[in-house]
Length: 274
Length: 274
Image (cartoon, rainbow over all chains, first blue to last red):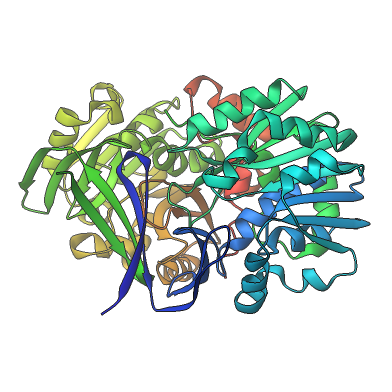
């Protein structure tokens, strides 16, 4: 008999996924970590019962979190990733000619499990000499570090438990502190369909800190409520003014499957969900 | 106790929707027709247990089926819709300065139920003097009519039962027969995630008839496997060459919520689902 997992979200919407096998299931000091196999999505990383990423669709979320802000910045040299222990964001960042990408993940087990069971997501990025991996609390890191970054990417879980602080104004102000003068902050900001107060609240808080704050979206099939939003906050370049030929040239060699110059601009036009 | 409906598709993927109320439930000569209320999507039209459209997200599907081909045509004057009894496609077509939009729906009950329970979807389009509604078999219509159309839109249910023939080469050839010399055919072609053989088969069949066949996509939240495809087949203009300013100008007064000049071009770049 097939096993199913269900991801029930607000508004009476749920996504059910058949599970053929569970490869890993254990509790770390921070969360329950599972790796399960879906016939449709392949191997899936599940944290506290919420699907985080899958082999088959991980590229949508990771390409869109990374390339829109990095292409907006004229020369991203030092990039900070908060969270993102599966390594998918790190892989996309390292496709750019950055000098260093620093990943600060609180839960070492997420990295270890991802590297062991989902190696295709990081695709070797953890072994890149430009990758620096710190097992630490991201909030403490941005509070205490003396380093500065051109781009900060927040690749978090849902706003529950420890991750909740990653969606609040105090944390955004700390991120602003570690950005260079024309730096860019970009965060995942939930579903356009059932988490709109989350993105709206983040936007209001970010607008108290940054002169320009823009939401954008992508279709992430493995997330219920698939219309997924990101929010980019910038003191420097405006993502809306990125030239198509520049976006195409800077990503041409990356082998991307979702992000592209047309998608860059279409993503900034959010569907006007009533 | 809340009632739920489930839409299980291939690959062990399902979407579950809570139902607060069922407003209509009856069997027509062609199918079971239900109108149910979801807390997230509002009123939903359900045919043979598959959600067809909802109050909250209908604009995505209808705008994308209609405006990409109509904007591609320099002057769509006569438009044919096969299916589309809910009236959403008709509404979008009539936003253009067409002389006439002919809707051929096999099941009168779909129109009657939609007009009674989901009036916001057609939004008065059935009462537009440019709308001509025929209760007839769409296949027989395109086989027998002497009329010619600039654009033919196929707004069908899933390829099951009577609708299955709407996905086959014999029907596509009949559609080609009723098109003007530079006419455009556009059809819904299923999920990019779990129905790819469907779209691939349609494309192959269409390429035997039309010199240019292109898939495009939109994110339709109420459909499980949300990455939804359409296929445009043309003897005339190429959708990829539509100028952004022309697309913007021709749709500026329409109050659109998903389609736009950026989305037109991004839609033609399908995510490369592995």
